[in-house]
Length: 515
Image 1 (cartoon, rainbow, N blue to C red):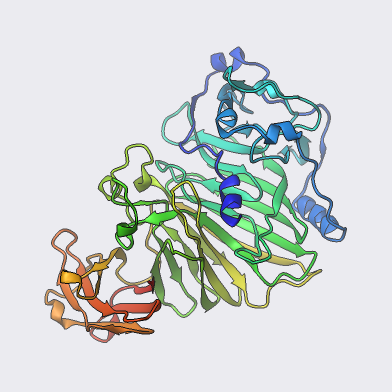
Image 2: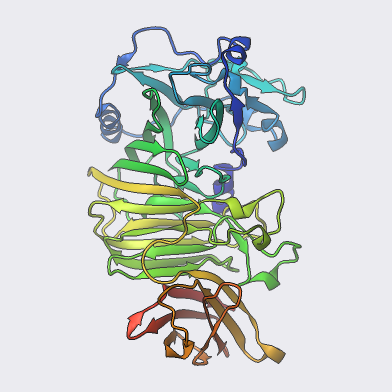
């Protein structure tokens, strides 16, 4: 059920960016396109959404209106046969407005209409729902169109690489999911506004962004502001996203969380991704590609100053790991495999998937970075979740503000120490033990004589060799290799790091091996 919910929140999002040429001639051909509701609008200020969230939190939860059941019973092939015509975008053909706003159709995995409002000159006006802004094939079923329908999300486009060509860079659709890319990337991992009871035996709760407010940008701006109102049975929330596109793309996020009940298992800065296999578990899958994943590791820059790299796993049973910390400097899911040859996939282009880095702003206090790894047989399923879990949780009736910077892009090294480039695990020669090989990047601090390096390896169980360091002729950096014998152990926690002249040279490498 948990995996199905992850997929249902994401499956219908477009996998590759939309490109649309913008011109007055093209705009005129499809007038009127998206339109605002007539009227002067309602006043909108910096606390408008927060005031709404406070009122929601002080009242019993009321489920949102849903679209007709016929719309949710369609097949995936039906849903992808209807799409937004980019010529109908808000502000299409408006040369003085640097943003184009698209919308998504309701249906299938997206049963909840969301409000979308435009803020200009201190007033907010809603977008009117118009089914004619969508194009569709003759395979799309004949479904009822009534007043219960609404848009299921929004997409933002701007001139990222060429004048007059508007490419998408961010999407908000499904529960509290949103995803973004740095210029030149394609969509991979996603983020969520709030995670509640993730991997709980009682079932996970998925809060929903109920309404959005997009501020009309100033001419020439590359930074855009989106506000969102969140609601769920357990909490309400007010969010502000300040989004600057580029490589990387940077979001500065302010989240006000107002719980209706005590929340012990709550997640902030939540990221969701997919990891099926790489050279750590390649032997479990019969596939022509050398690796399949959107992300390959969890990176943590903890409050104590350590930089930790934890390669992701696709376990045989659910795994939950907690990395205790106090005021973390950052954490995120990285995609360090960035060469075509790492995947050899001409369609999925996994080497162009972005990394996601969460950088807390202000005091986040004590808590844990949580990593959830769910077994998956296929790349179709998102099976990786990471988030920050406050030690004391969030109390009912409280109001807590979290601010963080979320960076999407190709950059995959944060913190200190030589980065881990790759981890390989498999049987040794003649099945003599299990070999672990860890490739680190090269750097100016790497001595010519690698025997000067101090190898530090710790394991929670089993027996392991002292390890050996050799230079990788392709990367120029050091490779640490060691052998271990698990005997009857079914789970072993490993920690390894290289030192030079008494100081750490590399990131801390952590790994949980399971039989």
